[in-house]
Image 1 (cartoon, rainbow, N blue to C red):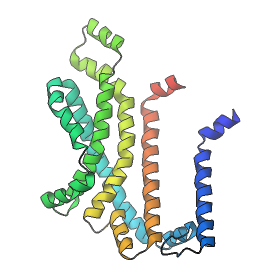
Image 2: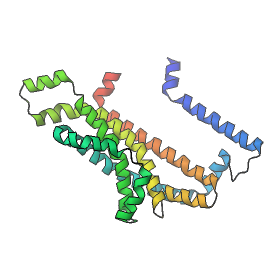
Image 3: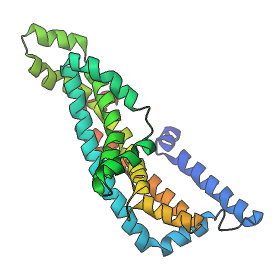
Image 4: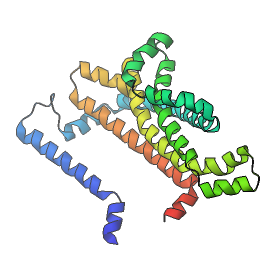
Length: 255
């Protein structure tokens, strides 16, 4: 019992990370590697603390951008999934195009959006929304098509309309799938925000990384990478916590 709780607490990955950081610190210290080429974890932490006011400014800008893009992209993804499920003829025409759209690299779409929409927030918002909407659309659509057939037959038998079936049976059944897509999009939104800031802008972690690359400050590059990882994890955990609050029946069933 104690062993299972220890594993459920998430300690093993934390121990591995600590060991890797320790090996990294010792390798840099004893190997005599130049700090500008490969800084030690302690130097990265020290420099991040020193530059914290500016880092926080860029982090806040990225956070606002990713939340806005995540909200827009997820809302569009949910609406698209509902429309495709309710209109099979529309799904037959657009579903292959959705799959095909994911073969276009995000970094290739960015410059085109800048040309079409300018250097403001709009191209960044569109880019993040494009990254976020696909996982939500596909996960929700998968959940809508996997509704319990016995319950579906029962709803038809008692004379429920297609609208009642959708809102009372299919959509609630698809909620776990929806949250799976939301958790994937949560991590993608951070990546999309950073890529959008690479392509244009004067604030954000992506812009901060470009500045540090020009200055050959590898330590501050690692600071930005660490913050990006932390943002992704925190956002993922927030969506996972919201899932437990919304889908109480699933939690009880799994326990």
